[in-house]
Every structure is written in structure tokens, then in C-alpha cells.
Length: 113
Ligand code: DGP
View 1 (tube, rainbow, N blue to C red):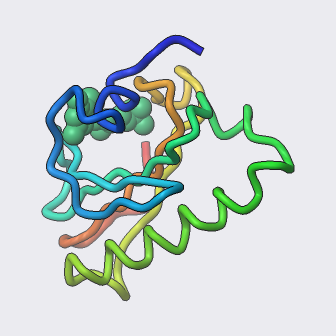
View 2 (view 1 turned 180 degrees about the vertical axis):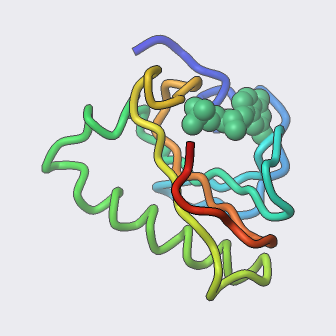
View 3 (view 1 turned 90 degrees about the horizontal axis):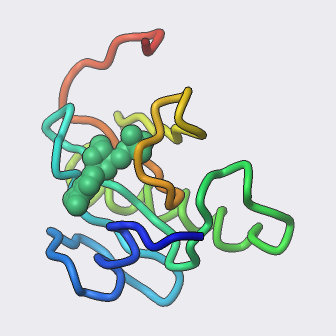
């Protein structure tokens, strides 16, 4: 996998507004927020897309969901937020390092485009 901007953020070689970090993952504010709360939760392991994950990633994938819960709660939207994973360029993925979008703080429409 080629290095992405998110790998640089993990290594602290690129700036980010980090709201959470532990051994397995990091969460930081999206640089182009689509809502008042827009946080990205990423694994430190460089999994390019969700479809590249395997059974050995089960723990980290579950952990990302729980951290998403936590950062949403910390941002004040713990009972009203959306998680989005864009998988592949045709689904809107632009950074090929798996990330969960935690989006909230406004009324969200459905279905997404
Ligand atoms: P996606 O389209 O699902 O791959 O989402 C990538 C998101 O990452 C997009 O909402 C913008 C955000 N993003 C891209 N580059 C940076 C960066 O350097 N810093 C931060 N904080 N966010 C970034």
C-alpha cells in the first residue's frame, strides 16, 4: 500500500486536530466537514479499504466502532450521529486508508447521494 496523508497524520508528520488516540486507532476532525461534527476514525494499521480487511482485523474493526461511539459522545452527539465508510473510488473514497466518518450536529437526510 502506498503512503497516504492519514499515515503521515498517524506518524505526526502532518498536522491534524486529533480528538482521540490509542494503540490501535486515531480520531481527528475532517478537514472538509460536511456537518458541525465530522470526525474521522482510522486504524493505525494501513488497511486501504474496508473490503481489504480480513478476519485478523476483527478486533480493530470492532474497536473503531466503539471509538466512533466515544468521540460522538465527547462531541455531544452520542445519541444522534451517522457512521459512513466509503469503500472504493466509485463509492466516493478519496483517501485509501480505511476511515469511519462520524457525522452529526445537524439533521441528516436519507438516503445519501
Ligand atoms: P473519503 O472521501 O471517504 O475518502 O473521505 C476522506 C475525507 O478525508 C474527506 O472528508 C476529507 C478528509 N481529508 C482529506 N485529507 C485530509 C487531511 O489532510 N486532514 C484531514 N483532517 N482530513 C482530510
